Image (cartoon, rainbow, N blue to C red; front, side, top):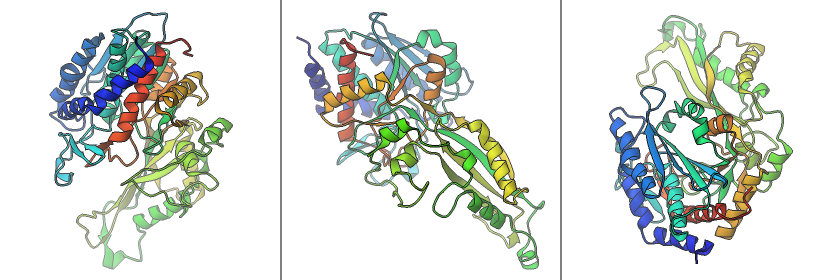
Length: 462
């Protein structure tokens, strides 16, 4: 007789017996980076040669279609419809990766080969995002096997190959195929847990807004001996402007780019929520950021202002001259409680009020919108209860992850609640050399999804 425990046992056996490691090794070996020219065939091979045939074996109808935006990776859609009266889940993932950075990995590691060391699997895409969506599909396969070829619900899949280029084309694609992709809920995986050992559900993601601060004082540099101390230095002026935007303890002083306050529901769900990156992550500096907020509230419920890059002159080849200009590329990570359409005006008004009218705000705009489902939504609480039953431990809900994902696309065009279940952690080095997947959270991930897939075939779904 098919049972929930049987489905979890199948998933555990596949993982513990080396089946998942072998599967992930094959996926990592495909150098499907979207950020390097000449890899277009590998983007296609990941979908048509690896994921597509696997899904077809599981009874999915699969299509791989070109991106609506020329020059960006293809998009796979798949559907397995058993009974339209039963719930339909949308599963999302991306098979593209960032650059391999082959020359930067430490000795003994390489990007396109899965290498196990201790409690980690190293390789490009292990954490972002090949390992994460492969776990979810492998869990689905375990449930299909336990139920002798049935699921008891319906699944649709969107797997894109341009997420690492801002998910360009995905919004157009989903909008054009909204009827085909409609579902009751999105349950998918990307990003980090709040801590490596704490299973997490995120109900959205923060958005990103970028802009340049530019101060141009003269057509070219002037001799530092003849003019230093007499003519204005753009780097010094820009640095002073930045200190009016954020104090030395990280408090954002441009209050117009911050949310009005934390909502009661966000405060409640983050009460007692831990934050930690695990081994190899950055430090959480006490006293940095918005006063009066916990670490979890700062990163999951508030906005941050970051200097991504600054330059004046040529640091790689300095000359004895007062530079003609200085530039800083800035980023705002924001939650849905803020309106990014007001950011540009707030920044301009702040600079003017502080005497920096000659500093221009250029290239301001939204890169990725924020998204959020209410943390108390029935689908969120259902997923939490299912995961806790499978794992025997508390599952932490956060209102949105700290990073960005294209959840807004699915909310805007499919009107689905978002249930993001990340399998990675903040210290995984996903966009740099030595990217890795922690084995223990990965094992919990396949069990958590096997339990949810099983429960979706039972009565009691939202």
